[in-house]
Image (tube, rainbow, N blue to C red; front, side):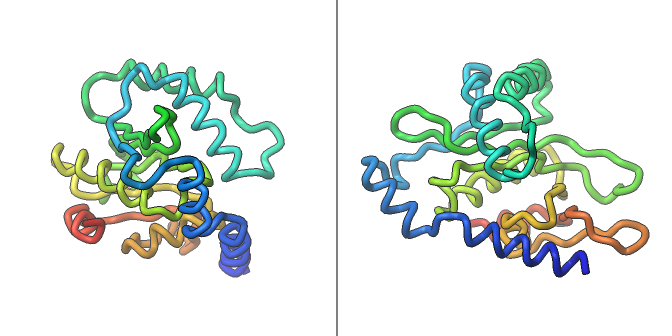
Length: 202
């Protein structure tokens, strides 16, 4: 029953998202194109913009949450994250031609006794609605995968809302559903071979 509910929620959320064609038209009206978008590693200078973008995209993804995290809270969280300078984690952003951040993805090391087969985690990946379905999610994911592979991390998982429309994106790229000890699925996905995932993304 839960699986059916997740499927229905995913379909409804997918229908609410603008199509690729619509978003391309909107970009054209703004004087943008895919070639004008830049994907780069985030820096500490991006923290205020990252906080605002994180709050906006999270609220868009989970619209039923009555009190979503504020931009101020997200900015504080990013400031704390950027204090970690050992190179283990990464964040990549999508920047438009006006210098605005419109998407980001974050990867962090992962270690848990319950899931010893995974050493990396895609902890966040978000895009503003007007920039979805344009292939940018795949490009962000590729950057995170490359970061992990360069550091000897060859597998990765993520934790998603099972009813999120983005789950289809992960499944299309070969993500494996990870079940708990009782055989239930709660939104965890994993890739056991990041080199294989990188080949798919390319």
